[in-house]
Amino acid sequence: MSEEYVLETQDLTKHYGGVHALEGANFKMRKGEHVAIMGDNGAGKSTFVRQITGVEQRTRGKVWLYGEEVNFAGPLDAREAGIETVFQTLALADDLDVPDNLFLGREITKFDWLGPFRMLDYKAMREATIEGLNRTAVKIPNIRNSIRNMSGGQRQCVAIARTATFHSRLTIMDEPTAALGVQETAQVENIVRTLKEAGEPLILISHNMRQVFDLVDRIVVFRRGRMCADLDIKSGDYTGEDVVSYITGAKTGEEFMEHAL
Amino acid sequence: MADTSHGTGGLVFDKSKRSWPNELNIALALIIIIAIFEILGQVLPYMNGQSFLFDTRDRFDSVFNEARLKIIILQVAIIGIIAIGVTQVILTAGIDLSSGPLVAATAMIAMSFAQTELVNGNPNPKAVFGPWAMDLPVIIPVLAGLAFGAMIGAINGTFVAYFRIPPFIATLGMFLGCRGIALWWTSGNPVSFPTESYSFIGSGMMPVVWFLALAAIFHFILRYTVYGKHTYAIGSNEEAARMSGINVKRHKVMVYMIASMLAAFAGIVLSSKASTAQAGMGEFYELFAIAMAVIGGISLTGGRGSIIGTVLGAMVLGVIRSGFTYVKLDGSYQLMAMGSIIIAAVILDQYRQRNRA
Ligand SMILES: Nc1ncnc2c1ncn2[C@@H]1O[C@H](COP(=O)(O)OP(=O)(O)OP(=O)(O)O)[C@@H](O)[C@H]1O
Ligand SMILES: [Mg+2]
Image 1 (cartoon, rainbow over the protein chains, first blue to last red):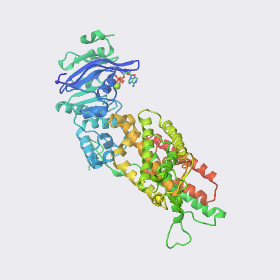
Image 2 (image 1 turned 60 degrees about the vertical axis):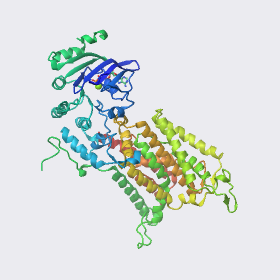
Image 3 (image 1 turned 120 degrees about the vertical axis):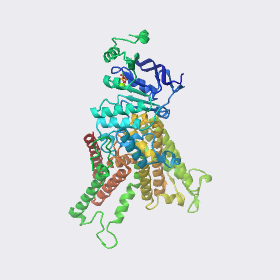
Image 4 (image 1 turned 90 degrees about the vertical axis):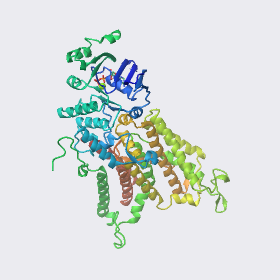
């Protein structure tokens, strides 16, 4: 499809047995655009993320990344294609420390001819971690502590730093500030603004109306597995209350009427 | 200097803040157990004040009772080799019950390619194959044994990773299967009279050399290579490992293969040491190997523990075994003591886990 879109999905659908978690999503985002996905609990937001990041195999539908059709066999494929994701579940290994987690699955190594037994370059990873965390202004008391011993917010910071440390063609954050304090939330929002300035596209999933209005260009609303609104909030035509009425089902976007329940 | 742990982007890399390693606890437990036997040696009237580990006869050339030390470690060396493998399996939150029978099956297979043609000038009475399989270079039985181990491990790993059979069940099936192979190979007959070079593999202190060398190698691999990091990551949080782009299934197959190859190697060493292979060999080895790992602090839920811990766990079992012989207590007490220690180790691990979260 068109190359002007960073991501495009057509009829993207995921059923878990009888549960229609995601149904016929036609999603598009332009280069450099920041899009929020909103919707009540269980609306299918995370399911959408799992389908485009190769974590799960979709029931049906097509996905294009920068105009190229993609069929990721697994999360590694998606990452190699340039999609960096903060999953809602964070996807951290509890018994490992911060550099280990940041570089999990893409370790800096030496003696690569040793195949699976190639050696970890701990020093390089530690330095890159410190640099990455400093750049994202994330506070971690001691990066050598295992993740298990960290607070929920610190864990979330590690997961965000993991995404922000690497350059990407598309960043996805699934409720990145859910467990964060005021200061940490502000820092994450700064990271998002940095991405915007750098022209890196972002999908942000959030329940925080203020945050969404502050940060993104467009809100896509999911309800019961279906997209039900696509709101250009930079136009100034929509207020928070409008968005709420789309989320709750009091309103439905015109172009989505045919599926309205 | 400013307190870098607060304020923006404060980062500390402080070695001193790393937590007390669990291996020290096990080393401490080992010392306490040794001390108990040492004290028992002094207080039990029939012991005549003998020392358990120290050399009390001549204080000049050695401090320790080297003969006993050697026996302690020699007794656990072969099972210790298996324990190095099962440690890795447990680190991925799996289990391998097939290693004991695999020792027997591998011993049978390897030994049948390691026989000599002539025993005291007569044809080998235990010959499995014809003359073509006699007096082969030692590498052939060793490779045959390791290849068999790799195959069994690949099957274990495939069932666990690709067919999602619980590791306990998959390796229980292989536990029975391998014992069957061991019995079937020669219809239950022992295989004996190996070549000189094959006999060397398990001679004297060689099992200890293999055990410590393999322990050192796998300690290094687990700590400093991608293989090791991914093993820990999978045991910590398998879903996170997968989402981070690790090929979890392929990695698990590799772990089970390595574990089975180590067990196969233990079978080679054992048959070499015993100069014979019998289908009943290696009974309970899988359980003692798991016990070594568990006593050594390898968490059964995966992700935590180290080879150093397992080596210490092996030493604990060795000391208990030797200590009970030393105080002339019956083997039944020995088993009861081992059982208690294993349970204590698991309770301790769960206690530590609760206090961490
Ligand atoms: N693996 C699964 N098996 C069965 N049902 C699932 C599975 N994963 C999600 N679901 C269901 O799919 C629906 C959508 O879930 P999803 O996690 O996408 O919601 P969400 O919009 O991210 O909600 P939240 O805001 O709570 O994170 C829910 O009804 C959920 O119960
Ligand atoms: Mg969600």
